[in-house]
Amino acid sequence: MEGDSGLFLVSFLFGAGVIAFFAFNQFNQPSFEASKELERLIRFLKASDFRNRRVIWRAYAAYTAILLLIYFLICVFFTPPMRQAIGFVVPGEEGEAQSPVVPLMVSLAMVGLAPGIRPLQQFEEKFRRVAHYFSGIPARLVQGCRELRKRSLDLPRDGSGMLLPDADWKRLELYRRHGEQLVDDPRDFAEDLAKILVYRSWILKHDVCGTGTPTREGIVRNDREVEARINRLVQNLDILSGLHGDEAFDLAAGSPRTVWAELATEADALAADVCAMLVLRVEHGLIAPDVHAVHGGENRQLEEAEARLSAFLAGAGQWVDHVALVSRLWTRATMVILPLAFVWGVTFGLAEEGWPGPEAPLAARIGLDYAVSTAMIYSLAIFIALSLHDRALRAEHPAGRWPNMVTEHWTHWMGPVGRLLLAAWIAAVVGVVALSVARTSLASAFHGSYWTMMVGALYSQGPRALVGPVLAIGIVASIDAAQAGSRRARWVIFIVTVAVLMLLAPALQALAIQYRDAQNYEPCLLRFDEATCAPFDFTGWGRLVAINTEALTLVALKTAGLGAAVLFVCQATLAAGPRGVAAREAAS
Image (cartoon, rainbow, N blue to C red; front, side, top):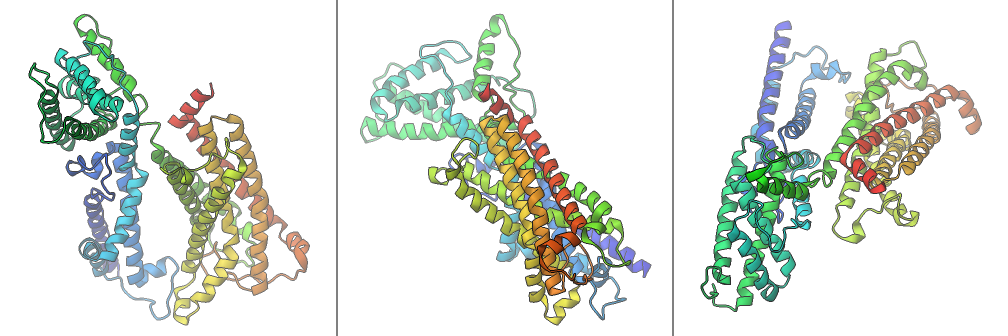
């Protein structure tokens, strides 16, 4: 039997290794459509090229963990000894051996069979899209490119030096004069041309603000493609404008205005690609725009070029990286929730639940159960709330944008906050109900009682799940306060959220107790077995509260303390992050 267990463990670990190797290749597959900023560059880039190595490994670890969890759950379902080890007992399965074939079959099916079945492939794509989304792929590149597109290089109209050849200064002036007469938007056209020529000279030729870091193959190939397109565009504009003393020549059969409009469109697309390449270089440490050396004498042109480039790129990748901020907030909130819930379950779990008899489980088991169930209530709600809030912040249509809860009137944000609260509550309810049903013995599934279990779990656990969405709204309001630069609003949000949680949690717990005692049944969220509590003999809410005073007090303290800890960490993250710095600068 021990030999079978050892062989099963080796097979299980080998299957996990296969899944991890498969995850690395799958993670690099794009999960997004090519936007305007990416459609010409994406063919040379993998998903891992969009962010720096540290962020990519973190996102890959999260994606791999999801696949390994699915692998583990499938192995549990097909392996009776694994089910029995975690408390799932089905009559007639006791004593069955662990087959080492099961993990191998599951891992090979996930690697070889799942990608060929469209529904399973779509299922995997959703997890990959979530991992890419929370690591800023491709949002950081797209948003950074759009930010740079709005900025101006502020090059002088009649300038010289700054590592731009005299011929390029002459081109810029000549192109501007023709554009003012023949292009619909001459200002944008001139700015696009300035960015294009600057990129060719400063980045491709002189490596201004370069760090000497080896360049990735995808970026090198894109640079070659972009440089070839720049040369073609400049050649056509030279001919069209008569730069070399020749008479201006029409490159097509159409009118000069038509030809110039076509080249202006090409310049607009090329400028977008140039901005995207600048963001990529900053992301991978190829350019250090905030640190440049002081040169003198013959290098004064390099010094001025570095200063111009630093001013142009300053903060372009930080202020727009809201997706990374959402990821940090959710990760740190979860890292606070899990250990605190575990410690609370070990210390006060039995007292809070009022365990009726001496056959109580081990304290560590209750602590683990508390950690999992609390994460279901809070982490899911925070995830949904932050995702919807981020989506609303980035909405292009004004009607869909998120109204700031600090700066705007309450009538403007009450509707969006209500919808956000409802969505987060539904996610938390689904999580706790699924967890409550899953933790009940699988034997119930063979007696057709799943529907009764789900209804009981919904009535018993659904109201208590509301505390997670309330905390999530507090975090969203903290983000709005950070964007508004209001320290007072931050403290008000902290105090109000903790107070609401302290009052709301025992009321919801009392509702759950009342339902449990009325039904004489508890599909318990906080226990692994099927033990039920004897009903209390009470009449009215006063007696209910009197009998359960200790438990309700503990619930209030636990919820308020957990909410305060999570809000403190999130507000500290906002204050220390780039948006917090920007808010303080705006306030001063």
